[in-house]
Image (cartoon, rainbow, N blue to C red):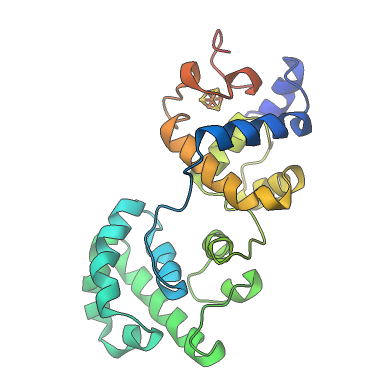
Length: 226
Ligand code: SF4
């Protein structure tokens, strides 16, 4: 259990969680109006593969690899038509290339066998694909316009804790807290904005509280900054 900033927010008179939601959404929207997924893709299939490749690496690295990859692999069949080692080589620089290759090929098989070669947009279908956990499924479903949850990655987790929006450390529990707090139509944008804020302002090691638009309503703002 992380240090609870939920209680600290109350103690410092910053208001209850629900009262701070409006200002948090408004300020993030003003500051990060350009917040969107950084992965580059042109189809549902490219989206799914990009998100699967993005585990444990940067979006920039994935985009560098997929720029070439997607010229060669256009349909689910293409990923199964080459020897496993060839796909491993093609995605090598994204790291964990053996596991990712197995997951991608397994996913392509299921897409062909059960979904007519199409990427499903329901969370319960997406999580049935090999190597597709809830976070990946949430990202894909959201980008396909069918958000059924909130993406909780490392940035969303850290920001939710620092802003005192959750007492939890487990992504599934954090997601439940955020779902209860934020209106459904804010779910997709919220994740993008928190990720952006985490990258640009609220760094894991050196949060820039002195230039943070949320400092006056953030229970973990450094003392003297707000
Ligand atoms: S005030 Fe500091 S800790 Fe709080 S969200 Fe901003 S940068 Fe992060």
